[in-house]
Image (tube, rainbow, N blue to C red):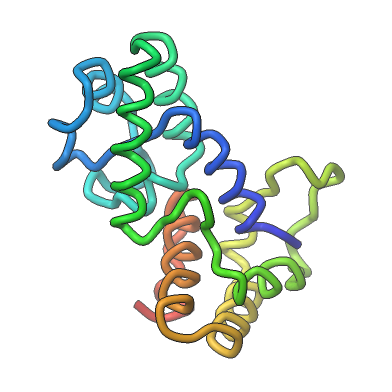
Length: 176
């Protein structure tokens, strides 16, 4: 089951059009992007949780729509560049969210309690996977046995942030 990579790539495809920036660096955004960002609710992500916001499809979708409607093409490109850099600074590289070592962990791990979507292009019920302790522990164990150093840190950052974006804190399951 490709819960995290499917959702991350979906978020990345949205974010590649127009995306977000950290509230502390909104001065780098054009005024239209600042307005859109200020008026888009990042819930369930905390305002300071940039990694979560970078993967929160329910935040990105209305933000992208706002930027597309209210910004010029040039301003939208500027907003995208600021957001991509901000997400990368938070440990989320939207162009390559999971390192290669972590991708088989995601692809090959299944959940006994969460149904796979019938259409592989459909984003699965990520919250279900995040709430499946056995699934999360299996993926985490695979990350730890397959990845090292920065790749392991990146895989763990993406997994935790993605689950937070769906309202689930997996830190008690995998460690802080």
